[in-house]
Image (tube, rainbow, N blue to C red; front, side, top):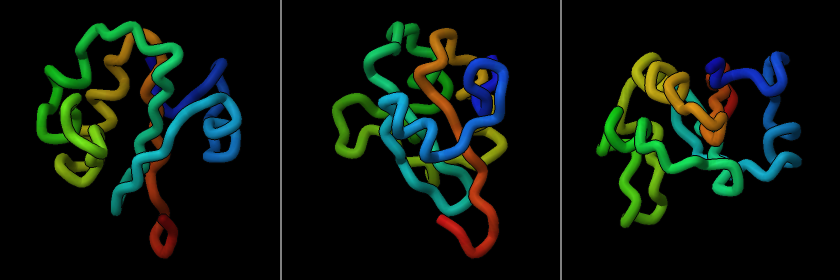
Length: 92
């Protein structure tokens, strides 16, 4: 699944927030999560317990892995509950 697309189109932050996603900011990548569509397949937690830890608040810490590793993990999410937007320099 393309974690940077929604319905086949590259996502933007406003669109994701409107769709019910919550933003977890990082220096190089922002991760978005929508609990309403999550299938709890566990690909995220198995992919990186450093980034995704269910008992922690916030439960997603994007900077605990590289942006490239985060993309790999997010692209394995079968439901599309995880999305990402890479951060441009000077932006967050």
